[in-house]
Image (cartoon, rainbow, N blue to C red):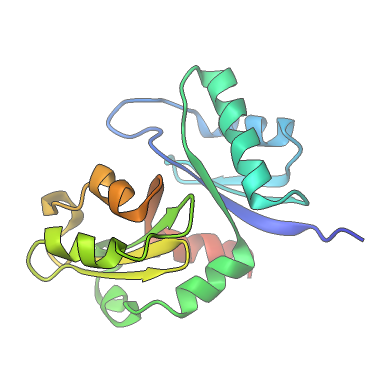
Length: 181
């Protein structure tokens, strides 16, 4: 018997800085077309909640191909089960600072398990009091002076991680989780 899981898809680099515009209704349509159910989007930056039976990795590549076919550009998609997001969120090393300013705590999901050296490599590039913590396939980063002033750019994070990563702030992740609790 196959169990239907609730998933969160994080689409990287859409509707940012006026590039790669994707209406959320069209993104929901793409998700439904590839067989996902109970599809819901959150915000305008590529957060999709849905139910399905396929594995995350299978869904990622199908979702990426469907986005490229529909919109004419590649967008990296990272998918996690919502139950896994809850565990990641509940074990965050930055819950105390997120309670004060959730916009400065970012959760990055990587397409592959994080390289062992990622935390130390990123710490060398970190500015001021930035703090990085890794877990299996992601990073928590605390940006006390804001992400806009950081030298930890997406390209730097991808290189250190060993694969494409996409980030969401504490409040967004919490909102996604709360939709299905």
